[in-house]
Image (cartoon, rainbow, N blue to C red):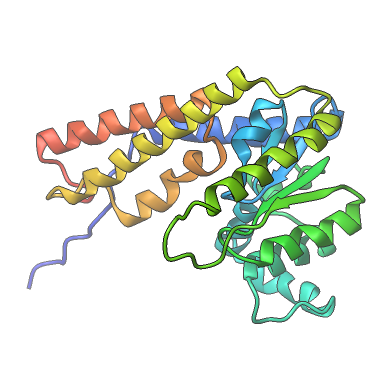
Length: 266
């Protein structure tokens, strides 16, 4: 009876570039927090990050921290700290693990990035309840704890269609964020800069979609696990030149695999 062949996942060369961009992102946030030379905004994953970027904020996404707490297996250790504050074990574990880690004074960033000991201190907290209602309460806790403003967008719940009232409502809520954000950032909103950031964000999303679609070929050049890793730039770097450049490099590599009939595993 022959030995069972071990299946291995092929290395994606573009990963080196991703690691550089992700490392640069977290070190820039840490530097801005420590020096206070640039304002830091916390933003939920589907919040108006393009608006924040165009006004000069360094943007940090706490859901990313919650995911890292889970993958580093720290979540179970820190969630009881949030439960002790009154947060139910049944609500979002991103919220409870993140707040629990803050209470305990630990972060997986300290192991991943030498010299980073804490999450960046925010100057403002911006949420959008699109993905869940809990984000408002999550940011409200930090607003009280850190004495910083928490501003947000309240998305219409479970609409069956996008009607004439929804778009103006959301647009007005985003517009209402501009004045307070100008005061906090010290910068006036530049519409041309905003248009550029939105265009980069759109291009990033379209490239990421193309990357995912390569997995529909057989053999697939890209695994589910690759997807969970390489979505990183689309999450934290959308609206930047770096995210667009990265997905162009990754897509080129994956298309070459498809052309040569190379799968993601061997």
